[in-house]
Image (cartoon, rainbow, N blue to C red; front, side):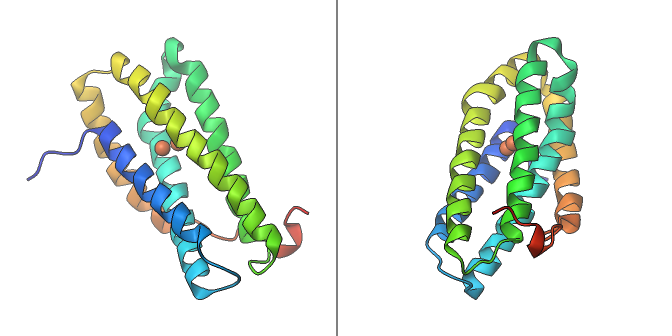
Length: 163
Ligand SMILES: [Fe+2]
Ligand SMILES: [Fe+2]
């Protein structure tokens, strides 16, 4: 069996997939089936990534006093991301507001993953053993699969979308 991918490399592979999906969604228009499909794909992918990332990595980093602050910061951003995705799902896809909200989400999420890659992951790696990382990789694979199956696209009603 191939060696499990190192956890932080694994997370970056997901991030690159997300960057690609964000670019592709931005090129779609109106309430097209392409926009619908890509947005669903992105939502399931990103929600399950963030949840599995918290369960596999952030739960441990939160317990270490040196990384508590940066972990809390990132988890708070995951929560904001969830809210933005839910709001976007409740917004009329053919309206200009949708694209405007999407562009804001793209900007915020790109900032989030860049910060993880440039600041957080290198700090985390210093505090972990190879065994810790191996365990994190296993938990991430297991949890992402389950979270993806359970991810919701439209938990909010259209009437609850922000103005
Ligand atoms: Fe994240
Ligand atoms: Fe991430």
